[in-house]
Length: 130
Length: 130
DNA sequence: CTAGGTACTTACCAAAAGGTGCATACTTGT
DNA sequence: ACAAGTATGCACCTTTTGGTAAGTACCTAG
Image (cartoon, rainbow over all chains, first blue to last red; front, side, top):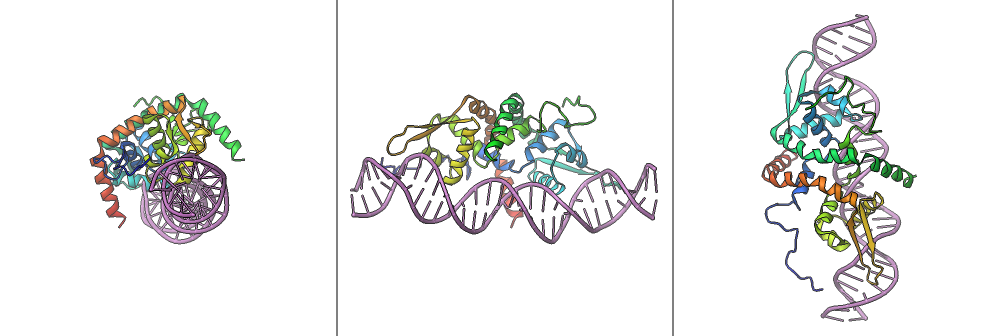
């Protein structure tokens, strides 16, 4: 098997630095809570910080803010500061964010449909780790 | 959009421990390379370890093997050992794995369609981090 | 006057995740 | 004989990620 061959697959010229479209997307939504944030914003529209905080349970302020800032800097989320006196801010999706959130729907559906199966998976994982 | 939810969000009784279907899925595919592995296996069918290794560029042996084992233990991937003398093993998707891979397709599409936009995003990210 | 709610910020830390390099046992190509 | 390829395993270490707890500035309800 003299594999002195030229670049096989995976060397698509169009995707500079990425292995494929999926890779592109994954890098954008990398972050423990980002997909969830996008998903919630898609569902409920403009949402205040505190609400989001309660919706995405178990996230800490530091990380939630941090990921919101990244999403904002990346143009997926829009932050609106009403500059009121008890602070009031809300977050919503940009058009790009909306399109990404739509692409997440099938994952959500999969999770719902396979919840039972996944629960078993996690039960087994827990056993292995003990 | 359909926010027919009662005052207290996030307290769905059906999803034990998960905040929503998306959360379920995300926990299964958590791992830097898992979605990519599923995607490649979906595309090329049974694939030998070495091929996979070259397809998912930049992954280390340790991590690739590790994630393959988890995917196998979770019932998403099937490992076939031909017990030949220079080792020969291949990996393929289980039905569950196939369904998950299908749910990943829109993400892949999104990445391809928004590649230009994402490239700009990363350029800006790089600037901010410097 | 104190407690609690708003939306954050910061310093410090622990855990998880992933990477490197070496080793295995055997075969094939040079 | 020797390098290289096959599919892993293991010890060790660094990086990344995320969490905790505190503080800020201001307001309202009790």
